[in-house]
Image 1 (tube, helix red, strand yellow):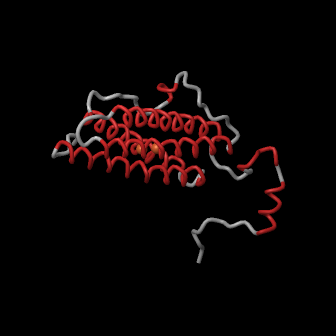
Image 2 (cartoon, protein in one colour; image 1 turned 120 degrees about the horizontal axis):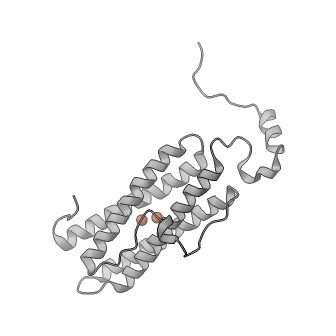
Image 3 (spheres, helix red, strand yellow; image 1 turned 30 degrees about the horizontal axis):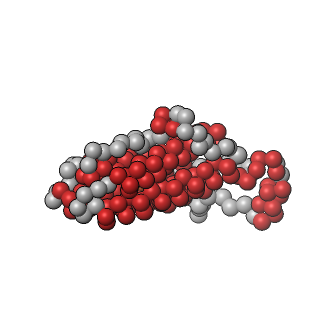
Length: 185
Ligand SMILES: [Fe+2]
Ligand SMILES: [Fe+2]
């Protein structure tokens, strides 16, 4: 009976392939897909994460009023996690042979999420929930896009996606706590 399992290379082939084309850097010769396009996509993810760091950092300072202390702490924690994501993505761009773009010029154009200050605590929570939803949407698409062509990048995005889903959930809970109901359908 024919197996539909993917073909597995033997050890000799794996060793020989690893020795060939060392100039292709860390990614090797079996990378399926367009490395340049992957780098471009990851530059946009990097910009998205940096904008999230900036927005949450700003909110963690600006949030004020009764019962804002817990929210401030949550914003600060998220800012830290978004920074971790940015570094992970930058590291991956570097592995793929690209140069991570940290240039503040054009940052908002490259980013999927927006930098919104929010007039008050509830507005800030809403803006963060919106930004998290954008990130979740975008990263789900990317997981499907990378699929089996680039499992390394896909697994990284999956890890980040899980955290963004938690972030969205945290913002949703805060919104319910402060408004009595979720204002976003
Ligand atoms: Fe993030
Ligand atoms: Fe997030």
